[in-house]
Image (tube, rainbow over all chains, first blue to last red):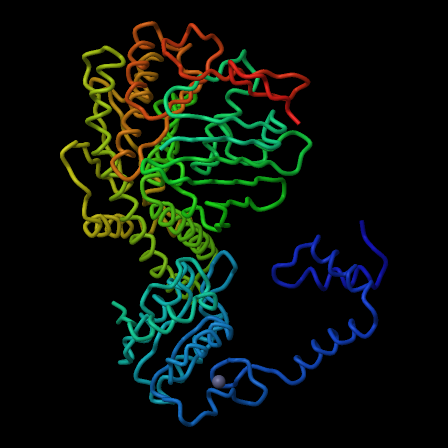
Length: 199
Length: 392
Ligand SMILES: [Zn+2]
């Protein structure tokens, strides 16, 4: 059944969020109806603030509160090495290992025909432009170790290698089928030192 | 290995049932439609991830209930206790626990309880479409090496993605078609890589099974005609089974797949579907050089299906634990000679769970008999010689 105006609007909006089906949307909506106004306002404010103050880094597409993100602004980072990840959360996972001193490029996803995602829907063109602009010498492909991440890595390596840039892939040892940000930090740190050239 | 306990909650015709088991033969005795097959079906579903009767889990949950639970407790050949809990329900994800820990991937539960089941439905492996025989090989290999299950699910995922891309590219032309095809190679690479791994494993299994199948068929069917096996690949090559052959090198198989895919590239683009790969292969069984799928009589198909299961037991036993064996409603279908030959086989197996409607059909000295009865549409299990446990 459909609820009246505002409630149904809330359910519809929640239902658009990733991982939330109609039933969960309904449950969250009724939870929000029951909490006091302060709590609901805190959530609303958090959403508005994040949209107002946080954006994507103009260079690497990491989450940023300025034109460029912290990593891109840090002059001590090695600009000749670029680590390519799917999402900002993957970047965070790698940063936590403290093993990596280069910069990043966030694709914004992985190639997946089932989800209607092709190279044009990712920040691939921007990646290619950066290689020349920033004098990149090595690209580390750190897309997730699942079939979509592998397909993306394989596509990018065939795109980047002819440009004379070294391409490496994070050594396996990551949990198969798991997302990068679930990888435990020791495994991830080790995979950086053991990265391999892509054939 | 052997099962020490099976517990069912709201599964098929059971509300709450539990049976303790020991090595050797246990006979589940009951008239038709009392719940014998429901019990062994549940064991198979928990152990190998699919049932021999239905493809979906939904049918396994007791009617008008939301959640069914299958619990298996087993003891391995070196005495280790293992448990497998599978919760299946309507509209929710299956939850599986191995030794009490939640697992998310099918590969984590594969091979925990190794089981070989022979049932009347097995005739479909002989006479059914190629998908039945691929499933037979995949079920065997998944129990032998859990890594096979991961590779198979990666392959299926790549195949879906690749088919979707081919379908999308079909409607495009010019530069957008070129852009779509630019990523096709990324999927082809993975299709070839995982596909060659699957093919190598399946070929190794076919080689290993062939000698045992041939000998068992002679013994069980009491017929002189030779049984031969071959793996028919969608690349156009057919490999005759050779009991002495080892595990093939996946590298040349990858080359073979790649070459075959190149040949059908245009047709794939036109039809929007992947035309070559282990998802289109077949296992060819022949009796006296005639394809069993089309030429085997009912009796021959039965003997051959049984020979495949006997061989499966032996091939599974080569790696790790020896599997338990389930014979579901089998004896009634066999003549006296074949019954006795099958009974002789049972002596060599660690644990055999047999279902039958008539005790005298089974020429076995069953160490344990469990009576299966149904009252008010609820099945119950009563070990003979014990006071029947009232179901709660
Ligand atoms: Zn940045």
